Length: 184
Image (tube, rainbow, N blue to C red; front, top):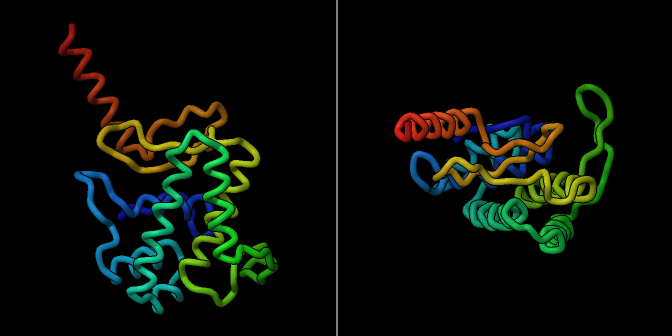
């Protein structure tokens, strides 16, 4: 399981990492098969306290959240994305609150003592809602390097991101290079 971005600080990176627990390389498979897989994931995204309290129910709820968030990255319909994100935000109790961090006060969303899925869902939904508000769906995508299905948030100035990571970009470039050599 590869963690991208900074999911401890960015709800958008957290959303991408949740969606990408369904791993597609080298072949599609479930990245959250056992409760221990979810514990490893939660520790990797900076949620160690949540990792210690994981149950089978949390596993099922996180997989459900993953499927709902994936719809946002795959749809071309802003109304559908808004509907999904609004529902996740409402169900997770994404209420803003100030929390003291190591470097001062910060704004957090979600229940302070809610379920693991509610805390993950609130952080992810609020971040994605803000991106949709500011940019529509133009910043969301899924990897163009077949067979990868990973999601990403495009933070480039010219909205040119096509691959989820450098590995996929390199793999696609090599595939294209080989095709050009074969054709010439």
